[in-house]
Length: 200
Length: 250
Image 1 (cartoon, rainbow over the protein chains, first blue to last red):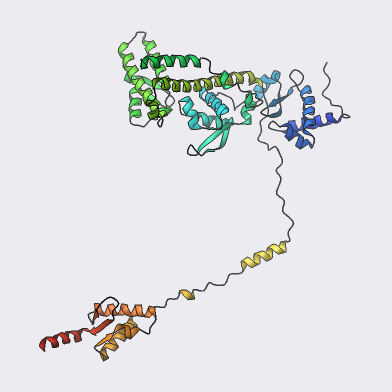
Image 2: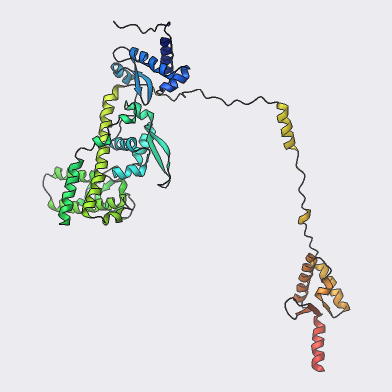
């Protein structure tokens, strides 16, 4: 049987782990090790060590609460085995019924952001207004200043909520663009074949 | 099957194909909003329903839809249209391939995100608007209320009234000069304007000149000036007439 969820008070790192645990319970968004260290008035390296302890106790299969590294910080979430029960209790408005247009727009903003609506339109070939509005409303993207070159168009970037909803530690976890676009070479070859016929 | 009567139910438009074309040509519907593929799908569905190949309809549809596509393409790249037209077929193919590749990658990224969403769909977490850090209230240094009151009292005193004395251009009434000139003309039949008003202030001279013009308008005097800036001579009208009569009779 696993050890009970009780930390030994005599060990100072255990005490810090309890503080970290408390901070994560009251936080509504992921906290970085730096933020945890500041709130706990302790050393960031010791906080990392304490996070190791907390993570060991709160992991899938051992606890209904799971510690995860997400959106550049640390946060508690429900264990996956409790997902069905959670689904009966709460909704997930951020990701419900995301259309194909919204997902493509989200991908463009995630890879090219901060970028403007005209940027999205240029790539997708369809006006992006409603997709952008929907993503803004869901809190998956947010405004990030204006593009002075493109007539002051508003620029957008993905939010920490986006990373959290998609379970990403950071945007660098997205697949590399070079690894996407299978069959692109085939398209290119076919287009060039057509071009050669025209020149001939 | 009549292509123009094809009923469409799109995000941006609902109605017959014919009306759609009219709206597009009148610039009342922005082609950017239009999903051309959805129109093609609608046509194909109708074609399948009929279960026979209507070549006339297909031909007509092909012409219309390709025109629509060309319009849309031009609309999407307005400033680049000219540039693209000048490209060699090889270059154009490369440019087109580049754009298609860009979109293909984003489309696959979107697919990756959708899969990710399914895999991560059983992750539940708390989202709340609670602020992370307690907001530090800006603290004010301790102050004596009496000092604030004293400062306000200074502001409460009405400022000294601004003197407008320097702006007082006192215009004497024109009538004054009318009477004056009439008196002069009773004694003498002519006089020199500069001599008469030379000692007065500039303003008074100006008003005196107005009086002069008024007398002239009434026909009481005549005014002569040999050259610009030469002395202005004034004479009674009847005197001038008498003079001319005298001269003529002499």
